Length: 227
Image (cartoon, rainbow, N blue to C red):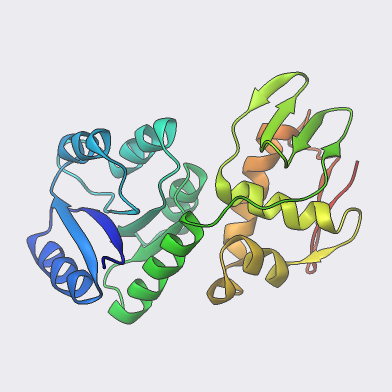
């Protein structure tokens, strides 16, 4: 039985060969493409369980491809890139990447992150009480969010993060607890992920993202959600 179908998008033949051999050894079905056009064709033909995406593609920047994917799909995307600058990682996460691994990479770590991303992608969206403010409503029964009456699209990761905050309304939720609930136990040191996603949620839900009323940062501790 297959552990999942993975689409690898990278124009480096060595990386593709490494991914094909090791992912197949892990029980995955692997499809490899070398450009954005072929990746979009593959995604339109059927949804994989995970996309491994390089940012340096010959026909389109990987971030632009990520943006195209996110406009139509919630498929988990793990970026695999030689871009090491913090702003590159922030940009990719901001556009909807589920994880970011830099090249050269440790194969065991990458495979662990692949397993985590596929596991999260197969999980049901979390449940929590409906959360109503003057500015937005989060309905965890139907998993719909509205801001001033207009529907807002939230990703599965954003729903998991919000569910943990709603369950502890008006209390500080530590960084590690949020990371564990949204990404899993292997991510408790990735506090930069929280900053990116908190900023995304503020842009989507807060009336003034630069002066958040509801999703508050508690410096050095975590985050708090208030009505």
